[in-house]
Length: 294
Ligand code: C2E
Ligand code: MG
Ligand code: MG
Ligand code: MG
Image (cartoon, rainbow, N blue to C red):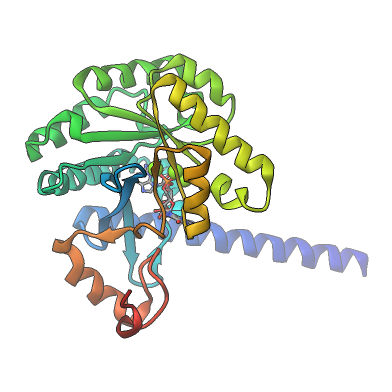
C-alpha cells in the first residue's frame, strides 16, 4: 500500500510539473509571438507627484500584456519570462521606444521613468538602446530616467555601474527602485550617485500599523535630504499613506491614490476593446465603466 501511495504521489508530482513546464513553454511562445507581431503589448504610464508643489514631475512607464487566452498577464509574471527567454532586450527596446515617444508629446515637461531589469545591464546593449530611443523621439536625455533595482546592481557589479555612469554623463537620470527590499542598500548608495530613491510601497503601506516601517521611511527620507537626492514613496493608496509620506519627509509620491497606470490616449480605444469581455487591465478598479466616475 505504501509503495502504491508512493508511486501515486510521484506520478501526481510529475504531471503537475509537466503541466507547469508546458504552461511556461506556451507562455514564452505566446509572448514571443506578441512581440514579433507587436500585438497585445502596451506601455501604461503612472504619475509621480512632487509633494510640495503638487506637480507631476515624472510618469513611470509600465509594460502591459494582453494575452488572448488568459487576459491581462501581470508584469511580475511575464517580465521574468522575457528575461529568462532572452527576450528582455527586445521588450526593453519596445518600452524605451514607446516611453520616449510618449514623453516627447507631454506639454508639462514631466520626465519619463523606464524600468531596466538586471538582464539588461552589464552587456553593452543598454546605452545604444537608450540613445536610439531618445534620438527617434527627439527627446532630450534629461527627460529620461531609468529605474534600477538593487538586485540588478548586485548581479552585475562593476560593469553595471560603468554603464550607469555613462548614462548619467549623457544626462539620463538614474533612480534606485524598490529601495529597502534588496541587500546592502547603503553600500549601493555609496557606489553610485543616484538621482532618486524609490522607497518600496510595502514600507509606507505598513507604516500605519508598524512603527518600524515608518522609521524606515523617515530614515531614508532624511538620508535623501542629506545626499540631495529625491525620495519617492511608492504604493500610496490612501490619504493616510499620503500623510505618512509627507510626515516622514519624502519629497515625491506615487500610487493609486494619485493616479493609476493608464494607457496612452493613442492606445485607449485598443485597450478598451480588449478589456470589455475578458477582464479589466491590471491596476483598474474592477467596476463597470459607468460607475467608475470619480
Ligand atoms: P516597479 O518598478 O516597482 O513598479 C511599480 C509597481 O507598483 C507597478 O506594478 C505598479 O502598477 C504598482 N503600483 C503602483 N501604484 C500602486 C499602489 O498604490 N498600490 C500597489 N499595490 N501597487 C501599485 P506592475 O506594473 O505590475 O509592475 C511590477 C514590476 O514589474 C515593476 O515594479 C517592475 O519591476 C517590473 N516592470 C514593469 N514594467 C516593466 C518594464 O517595462 N520593464 C522591466 N524591465 N520591468 C518592468
Ligand atoms: Mg519601477
Ligand atoms: Mg518600485
Ligand atoms: Mg517593484
